[in-house]
Amino acid sequence: MDMMARATQIVGAAMVALRRRNAPREPAIGTAPQIPGAREQGIMTLKMPTARGWAEGEVPQAAEGLRVHAFARDLRHPRWVEVLPNGDVLVAESQQEEDPPRSLLDRAAQATMRRAGALGKSANRVSLLRDADGDGVAEVRETFVEGQRQPFGMALVGERFFLGNTDALLEFRYQTGATRLEGEGRLLARFKPGGHWTRSLLLSPDKRQLYVGVGSLSNIADFGMEVEEGRAAIWQVDLEGGQARVFASGLRNPVGMAWEPETGALWTVVNERDGLGDETPPDYLTSVREGGFYGWPFCYWGQTIDDRVPQDPAEVARAIRPDYALGGHTASLGLCWVPEGTLPGFGEGMAIGQHGSWNRSILSGYKLIFVPFRDSRPSGPPRDILWGFLSEDERYSRGRPVGVALGPDGRSLLMADDVGNVVWRVTGA
Image (tube, rainbow, N blue to C red; front, side, top):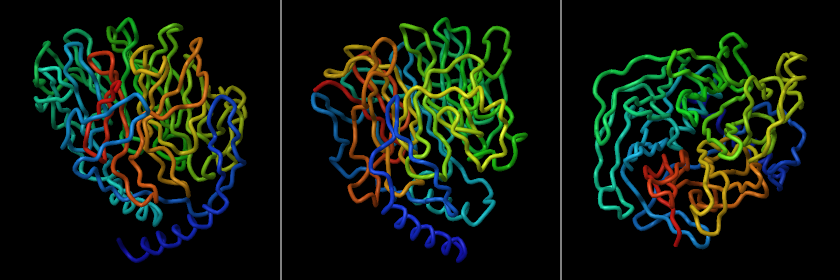
């Protein structure tokens, strides 16, 4: 790191200590969160734990009545999990790569993210894991596809396999039981790379449409709205005709998506904007309406104006308030519907992988949580499923939760841990 970037980091550390003294102690969580007023930060808070990984014999802590063990270890930055109908488990191994820094703060942020294991050379592959003997541990590992550009979301319809790279949606031919894809894949849609780079995928229940999460390039349209066109949105791609369109917008970084089975509503988790305080605004879980606009970059949590952004009153007026706040900067990424009976002691609801904060004075996230549902809506405070990824003094992380999926047996959860390089399996004790 050069001297100027180092100086920026030192000043930032001093600001973290000051802001920690005045940080709100209650998280902004639930359907009616108490969101502190915005306090614009001259130098944005920059704080991440050093990536350490799991020592021999260490595992995350699990809620009472649950147990956790490694389904697969020694992966290379596993980010996303997809379970195929035959029980094979696919894991996207990919990572954010360095963009040219635009400022001293960018340089300091990149140095911090490298230390935290959040920035580096991407493996750019999908691995296949197979638990042939049914003991809950994968004994087969194959390279399913490689040479991709930051692969992330995956979906399968019959013999059609779809892969969400940061710049494109591709289709490959697949045969049941295959351990490797052949060919380069057929281009279905292009997306702008850079910034929030993940492209999660979710099939419609009738398997005719594919939904794609596309995050913003910047924090608050810092480089203008033109470069953000088509971003901060969920796209819908028709798998028969190939047409692609924006389904909903104003979602700064929508990553995990899931269907609520009773109403058929689409839900997503969204990472909100930075630089306004530890709990301001909160990341959120929300149902998504076709044609809906959710505020970014002009406002948040309904019509709360972000006065750092040139305003569009018409857009603000139609902004939809999210359903459920998840706390400030938790980096909630993974999302999975959990049916009743999956985990003992937990009913139906959503499991959410919280990757963990990087820009607040008191760290948040770094756990797998459960939001209970009743009558197709969130119905109470979140519950921890797994934790212990972050050290108590916040100096290092053993792991960071990301994608989460229902296990092949229907009675377990699989969760990617990109700092621990593990896929964890959670079951009843």
